[in-house]
Image (cartoon, rainbow, N blue to C red; front, side):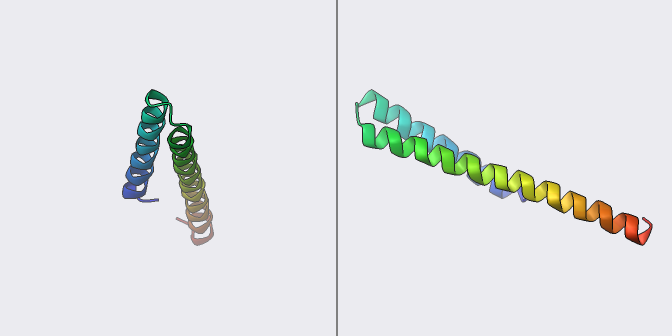
Length: 69
């Protein structure tokens, strides 16, 4: 996927870490849990992005073999 997607995922993960930290400092379990959830979503998106990149590379390799490149 695009580098901007990776950057967005990282930003979302960092935002989640921040929420979790503030939640811990203020004893706000809801905010802490929300932060953990944000991190999990960001990590999931990153994994999907990585798999999509691998699939794209595989398709390109097959295409190259079929066309003789």
